[in-house]
Length: 383
Image (cartoon, rainbow, N blue to C red):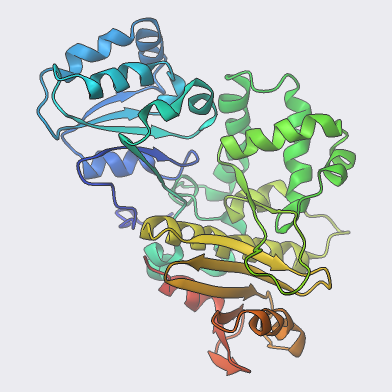
């Protein structure tokens, strides 16, 4: 069981109202309650609060009026009552209310998108919380464990992490997908999630996924959108800036957490475990990089790069002050083949810092490429 009081690198915006999005179990509510111990809070996981404020959004007004300028007011899982955003916007614009700091969490962006989260654009920042970073855990981070169990606080803090992880996706489907009526056929959507696990770390081909899960191809565009809106996964775009070589245009797909991927990717006697663990390792690195970029707030983006000649680099980090090319290998040896993609990328982009992450123990330099043990890299990756 994980030790408590892990210091998170996420830093709330001072004074300004903000949204805090993140999948269930990432620790949003626990963090905010610790960071704002005296804040007023409405929990919309409580059905009573959902009914009360859906029926009567004006009930928010008497709760805000006694507060003072700058006081934090937490609305937890606000996507459950998306119509409340209009009332929040009205209160923000009115001179009859104190200028409180509204803090709105959500584990799904879908309803807010449909009902107009843009109403608060400019008045509420959009921030994200991710599973633990390896560097947040420090010595408690164990690579082999993280590959199979992931880094969700809900899972790692459980007395039985493996069982909690198995239940996680089932509960997500029941509580988010079923309750919100997002799909008509839960069985088909569940099959889709399992089939999609075979695309984790791969260029997304929904025709293949459709065949594997026996769901119409026309349905899968909506399914993948639901996965992204529920923050269960995301597509990684290709890097196309000033291309000299012909590169592919399709995106790759990743589940948001290596443990969630591993729990969905059922491994049998016919599966190559090294391929499964390689995809888990790649996803683990990516989720740490995405958290690192998000918490830094430096307008950096992450891509992948693949030429039509099949030279590839897993991750390209690009921003005003960052240009890194990172390749991840589930191997303890550094071979010429493992350097090929980075060397090809370096020919076109000599300014990029080239990094190979591997399962060895020593940091080395080969042909201008820093080769770093992946566990060491992750533990040192701090915003």
